[in-house]
Amino acid sequence: MAEYLVRRVLQSLLVLWLVTVVTFAIIHLAPGGPVQIFLQPGLSPAAIEQQIKNLGLDRPIPVQYLDWLGDLLRGDLGHTFKGYIPVAQIIWPTFKNTLILMGTAWVVTLLLAIPWGVYNSARQYGLSDTLASLVGYAGLAMPSFWLGIILQQVFALKLKWLPLSNMYTYGREGDLLDLVRHMVLPVATLVIINLAAYLKYARASMLEVLGQDYIRTARAKGVPERRVIFRHALRNALIPIITILGLDLPFVVSGAALTEAVFNWPGMGQLFVQMAFAREYQVLMAITLIVTVVVVVGNLLADVLYAVVDPRVRLTGKGVQSA
Image 1: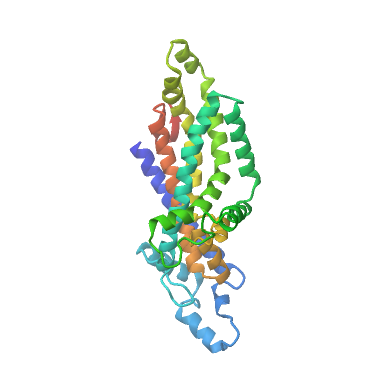
Image 2: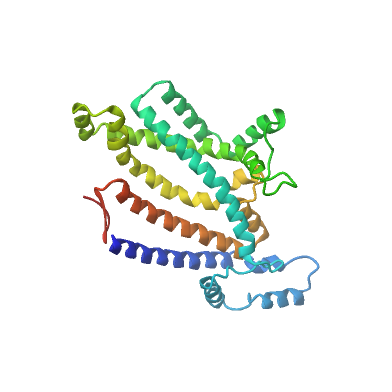
């Protein structure tokens, strides 16, 4: 296992380096590039040229990349072109806000989907299974922004039970109860949208495992049904779900731009859109790098969890293998 982890860490470092190269090249070779941000009416060519020189944008792109990479290795994410604000000062507050929203939605989705999918696998085509199918189809069919607007119209504008948008009521920043009330609608939106996939995977995975010979053998021996499901079947059925968790983990930190925009939630998704329009490429590169790190870590954690959940899975230097 140690050999496998070392290989994966080295591969991850290579992936991260390639992402920095590609991201830096795409952004600086795009039409206009970072220079476009200074081409504003009223600025003289001399002022624009001086600003470009001050920020080092007049140097060759490989030199700019090496300087940026060196700063990055020292923990410096750079500064914005407008206002020369540290990128970390902009990103980390929104990163925390996204973790609060997306992490809560993710946990609620799992707490609902896995038990519900397990229950439905043991009682196929019943009322609960039919209801889960309807929820799944609705979640797949409805765009997140449309669902968010509908929930706002019903629960915020018509019934006036919940706040319309934002993270806090003005003047109540830091109030936990106020934060929870503001989270209800965006979390509900994300849960309904994401619940469909997790329900389908949990149910289908359980049905596949429940049809295996060792499950029939356990039942024939008189093992209680609850023990058959939760001890013998569920652990093996979690393998596909762990895969989906590893793939979905980046969304927990990158945010849901449409949902955050609808509810005016100050998170990473909304920040990325704002910085793209503002052409603040240093912020965009930092966000891309953070998401890449989470992708790499998420996949590594998923591989390790395979071996934890199913002892038959072995982590070797050649990868993930079944015993």
